Image 1 (tube, rainbow, N blue to C red):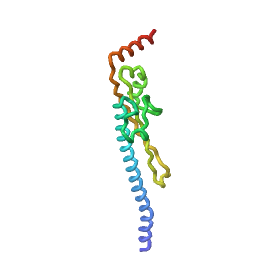
Image 2 (cartoon, rainbow, N blue to C red; image 1 turned 180 degrees about the horizontal axis):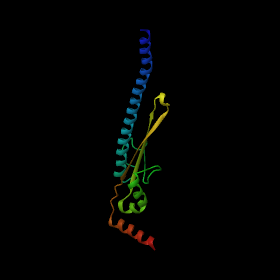
Image 3 (spheres, helix red, strand yellow; image 1 turned 90 degrees about the vertical axis):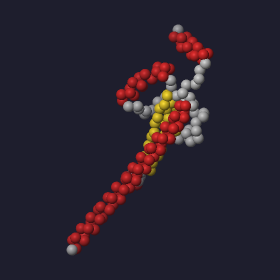
Image 4 (tube, helix red, strand yellow; image 1 turned 45 degrees about the vertical axis):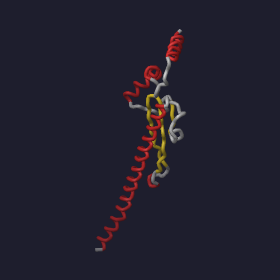
Length: 154
C-alpha cells in the first residue's frame, strides 16, 4: 500500500506541471495567432487606404500612420514567394510605368512570451502590397509625360 501511494504522488508531481506548461503554451500560441490576425487585418486595411489615396499619406484614416509604415518601394526583407517574386523583382521600375506604382504597408506588433520559455517578447510582422490608384490625368499631362520620355531618349 505504501508503494502504491508513493507512485500516485510521484505521478502527480510529474504530470501536473507538464499539463500546466501545455495549457500555458496553448494560451501563448492563441495570443500570438490572435495578434497576427489583428495586425494583418489592420495593415491590410491601412495599405488599401494608402493605395486608394494615390499612395500618399495625407488622407489616411486615424490609427494608420503610426503603427503602419508605408513606402513606394519594397522594404528590406520583403519577399513575394520564389517564383513570382523573382519575376516581379527583375521587372522592377520598367513595369511600374506600364502597370502603375505599388504601395507597400508593414506593421509590427510585439507579443510577450511566457517566462518558462525565456520571457521577453517576440515580434510579428504583417506586410501587404497593393497597386496604387493613379491620379486623374489631362491630355496636357499625358503630352508632357510623353514629351519628357521622348526627350530623354536623345
